[in-house]
Length: 204
Length: 204
Image (tube, rainbow over all chains, first blue to last red; front, side):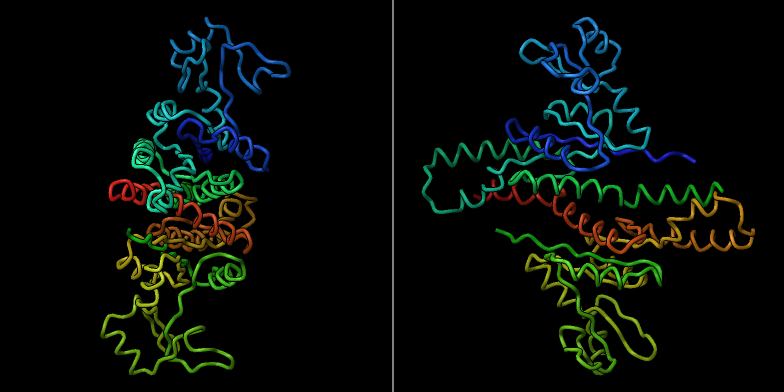
């Protein structure tokens, strides 16, 4: 019988929204979710372990991974390369385990090209959540401030459109609870389960 | 600004799966979910309150509700009519509250015709969940027993296809947790949220 594949979860959102904080808080909880390990060319810091914190690579090794299409996405950041090795993600999914990638919006789009079946979660800044109150609100803001906020909000809303879920990061614990709920709900999706049972009844 | 509508949740599944037990256990927990109140022609029992346990109706009143298309679904059961008044459901949704209907599979299909946007949850019998082990298992069952179980399983799987989610009722508390997670996840669906924010940015 075919083994059920894990879920690829992608947590993304605008810069500064708190993706890292939310992901760390999720890691502290007891779940069956695995965490993607990035490859990087930057030097290990004290206590960092190869294969746990990062896969530490030379620039040559990293470039070879790019050339061999072994990275789901990659980017250069202050002189170092960072990327998501596809093998680790694929192995985890094939073992029936869910894996989460915490990633910038550009990287998330690249992951989506390769894994359209992934579960894409957009972490929404509280500023957007508060938009309603602030704009409609007490009328104490200048027109310039309101316009600027509107433009930022429009850009953020535009980014949402490629995602399956939008999670408000009003409080880290609440955002973590919502993500855990999304994972449980995704495992209850009829498409996933019905195929499993159909196969069972037909094959045997 | 348009008020966000509540979710119509429909909990259904094969007879005897434990819909009532799961729904009661859900009611005992603190959630914002409202519970649909059925109309019935049966006499109130001691302690039952009109508008809380049921809307108690005469046969004439009930038939008028049918004629006026004011029931989402209805059925006759041991000489009495039972049905779901559409007004109560509609008002709850318009007030932005989620409402759950616990209902037989035939009724669920009727509700789906009227509310295709509802969230349809199929409660799966543990027998189906255990099918894999039992069939593939230790080979101690007779062919007749296996065939019978297969036929029941096929019918149950066939019923699943109209649902969005399949929740295993292996343990009531786990089933309740899964349903609560589905509600949270549905509120995080991008389609719901992006429209809300788009409207906000465009209207103002």
